[in-house]
Amino acid sequence: MKLQSPNSLLVKLTLLVCSSLTVMAGATIAPSLPAMQDHFAATPNAAYWVRLVLTVPALFIAIGAPFVGTMIDRAGRKPLLTLAVLLYGIAGSSGAILNAIGLILVGRVLLGLSVAGIMTTATALIADYYVGAVRAQFLGFQAAFMGLGGVVFLLLGGFLADISWRMPFLIYLLALLILPLVVFVLPEPNRSSEAQQTTHEPAPPFPWTITALTYAAALLSQVVFYLIPAQLPFYLRQLISANASQSGFAIALATLFSAASAIAYKQIKARLTFMGIYTIAFLSMAVGYVIISLATGYGMVLVGLAIAGAGLGLLMPNMNVCLTSVTPGAMRGRVLGGLTTAFFFGQFISPVLSQPMSGAIGLDLTYRLAGGLMFVMGAIALVLGQLWKQ
Image (cartoon, rainbow, N blue to C red; front, side, top):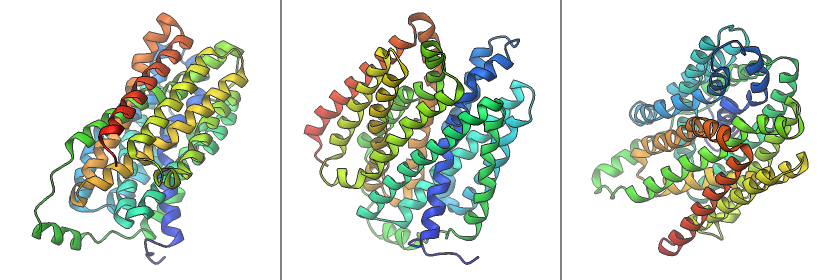
């Protein structure tokens, strides 16, 4: 198979499918959590360990991403992406056959390291291949494709979890089907001209303030977002005795609305500043989470998830476009690695914070407090928007 031009449809599809693997990293097995907890009921602190199965990949994505960013800036993108996709398929599917929760956690650790490679490298390749409005549009497509992939995989995970809690782990084998495309289709970007240009020009000042604010927003928004895959199956079981399929459908609905708003990102960005989009995104998530916290039935939870998902879908492309537009190309991998770290560290600490909180005050009030945090972040973004007009 011949290496393609970055503008070819096959290259674009390969990048989008690779990006969808990051959604599968945690949320695909979310509908399995109650049944997995029942299976390991004899294990001390089973509820805690089972939630770690969902979120421990996020910790090792956070740990691995800065190293990935440095490596791909120095040694190139494609070799590491190839290795990461291979590891993803093997480590991700290991939970289907392993019998000890400790070994399952080891597999999830390796899965996390592979996702660090995939997410950072795929986004860096998009930023390398495309510029300007084309880049903004494609990063919106990336977030949308991740959301649409999440819909399919979450629904499939929910149905498979009704058969056995082990079955959703088999979905990770999809990566092995994508591997030949990574090897034979994606070209390694030629960044030599960019490097030569930067050696003859003074380096622009690094945008520390924007980068730090973006990382903080990524971390806090993911702490709140991950209340959905980590806690919603338990909330729905408590509220309406929901089964795994209902939980999978509910989580998938949030990702569907996330995908829809991400597709519209280019058009929204043409009319609003980065901070304006942050304001809308955070306030949408706030309204959605408050509705979830007040729900008395399944339908009201779905309405809240749809509103929150629409806000969430704007965040990832907005962060990626913002950072790639203000940071030097030679540091792109490291900056995106830092963003990946912030995203997934937020996912990891989400259940660490929410589990004791929900045990003390209940899941309904936990969702309400999360909505309050999003209202505060929306207000901060509104104020910052008056100071920074990009």
